[in-house]
Image (cartoon, rainbow, N blue to C red):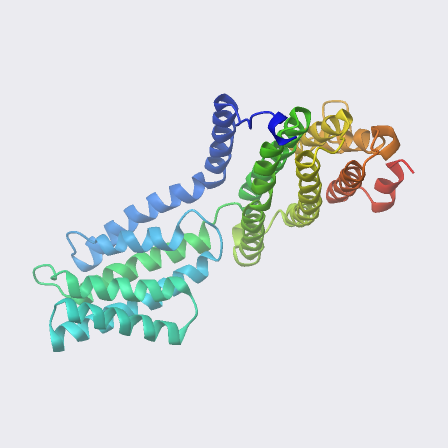
Length: 369
């Protein structure tokens, strides 16, 4: 029976390349401001360190800025604080070791271990621990510039920390921009899973269904990243005087994330049942593939504004149209697997409608009895 199954197919290169390009463009849109801040901050830190401390090559100032700011919004102020403490511990211990026991492989071993132990005792932050070890290692491994020592490197690094702190506090990126990018990117990823599952269902391709299910199970990382960005956005909203607006949009993003999370769990169950049905040659009507594709189109449209002359966003309209068709009899779902898939699609549609402002009662009212 298994010998008659079609040869497993892979996603065509053109489709894969298009998806990667779309995802990369969305990541760029969500990170360009942070990248610009890193470049600007590195240049400012370099100039300040040269002007204040007469350092010809203040590399540590630039490194501190880039490590502090990075391309993520998550807990930026905490990262700056951790780096500052880590630099202080690392440079202090490194200078003491160089002064009393000199340089060498044994000294490197001892200083890295000591710096990490001290930093770990003081705080649980991974960045603090790593920076303490790295800065101490640099002090021991590299001889100081002519006329300077550990103190000069410490001043360089702390200059970068101050610049990064000022940028993080005064010029934070608009968290709404990254959240929109996260939402759109994840909606596209979920839509891809639904479309590929529909293709596997039409072709009776159990291997492809298994591959789609594996990708769906790995999607939690993206949801977690979205949640972290939301938490960071709420932190920016509380702390930065320039980002006090947009409270309602952050609340909407929180609701959308919760709905997407619930919907994803239902989709995973549906995809698992599709894979099981194909593996054991259970009967699955073609109408299920059409329902998966309709759901994919609605998911991909999440966040888009209503069309001109309309009041309902395309995603909500598409989900409402799909909801009225999601009955086991309407879709010809006779087997247990087909019925389970229909049930999960119904729950998914309700979750997504609620996430976009439709009440639970109105969403359930659309579903066939």
